[in-house]
Image (tube, rainbow, N blue to C red; front, side):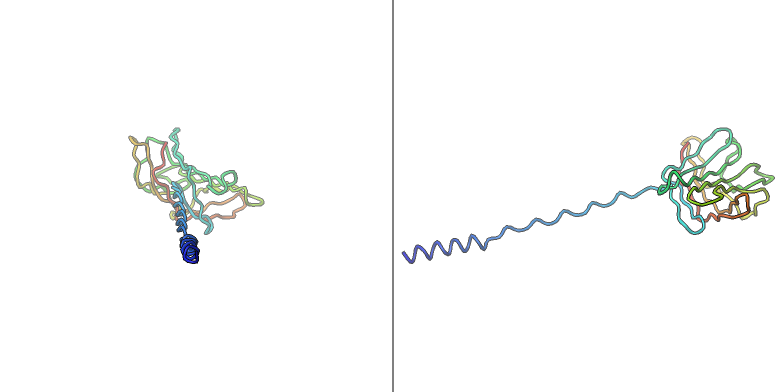
Length: 168
């Protein structure tokens, strides 16, 4: 009898000590990278846009909204007539070689004046460079750096601007 109890005790101990291995935790899914097709810094703050696009409507425009504040920040570049667009550098404002190349920025997060635009006589450092213009694929890419002013002369400085494969 003692032998039977001992055998059952050993079997019970073996069963209790057998432990099911815990499952390995599920790995965290990799976040889907966000593809920003229009990015720039304004006064040192990075702005990213996922909805950047081109529009060929006589003039050629490039615009987009801040992905984090789409109802409050809006950006637009207006280039010359669509038929004259090419891979080159366009200077802002009334430049004799490329008239009407302008830029516009609206920021409702600011108090007071919130509309900024390029002004006639902007320095030649204020420019937009088209690095790719494919009429067949309807894609445009480029870079920009410039300053815009409000009606009171306050400036917004735009640096490190890029747009990549915007479609129209």
